[in-house]
Length: 112
Length: 114
Image (cartoon, rainbow over all chains, first blue to last red; front, side, top):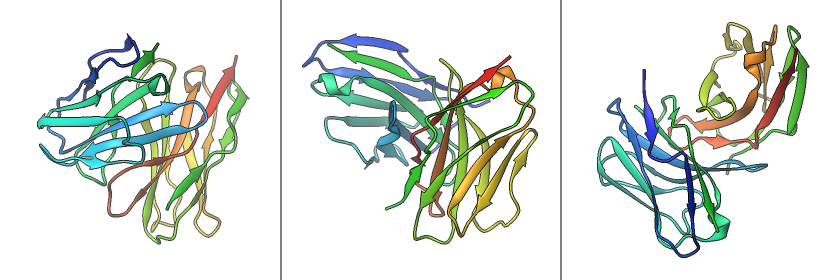
């Protein structure tokens, strides 16, 4: 089975802190994604990557950056956390761009 | 730009009964994929069912089936013989034939009453 692991299930950070959310997949998938999930808004794409060191902006990239130095790992970075970034963050991977997405369990971030 | 709309924020069904979750979408593309994903409480999202737009036959997976109306841009999910384990948030999603990002609806929270 595909396993997508997000490093932290729950985080509490202060405004202005730098936040790293890590995601690792174990199935050699080419594509990895970071989504943000908010009630009533569904999931919105922040960034995705279709290869090592490659990244594409999604619908809401402002305030975020990403890093993909190794195929299995895709990191989401909040350079200076703000309260409006309090949310659930979901990482996903897929073998092909048209393939099924496999999701991690999510990281719930609270910014105080 | 493509959009996906789920107009039912919450639904409830009695155990063993049938429930239908609604989804509409907007696109100018003729070929695409549609999905239903399930997110159980505090657990990861999993794929329930997938439909290719070029296929006229509605997809089915055990107790889960879809009613795909391409002209109406409607993609509803029917859950038959509902079980307590079906309680979850359900998301409808769209993806272009070229691939790339999934576009999600707002979600429908389904509760199952024993």
